Amino acid sequence: MKNMFSGSYSIKLIDLSYLNASSVTNMEGMFKDCYALTSINFDNFNTSSKITNMKSMFQYCYSLRTIYLSYLDVSSITNMENMFMHNYQLISVNLSNFNLSSVII
Image (cartoon, rainbow, N blue to C red):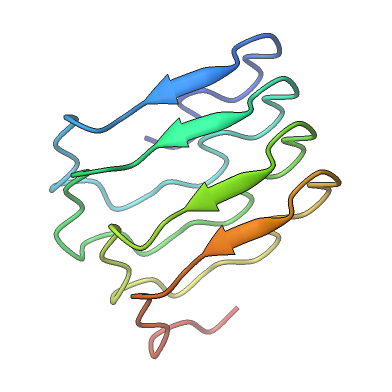
């Protein structure tokens, strides 16, 4: 899923609620440069703790205001570098169930 939506400048809503990502290991830059993105639905998004890289995942998502990520299993992530860099409108990030014990960066 690395760079999957990267550069989708005009997309406003992404619904990943029924996508099975249980084999995914890399989400680096997945939404990078999605300037108009205002909402991402991660409800029921299955990651099964295999993801290790979320570097720059939401970087340059200028219009994103809230992110609810508590559904994601991030227990294997080692890299979250610049994950929310340049998110000037971001006012709320819910990471309530995040296990960040493996994060190095």
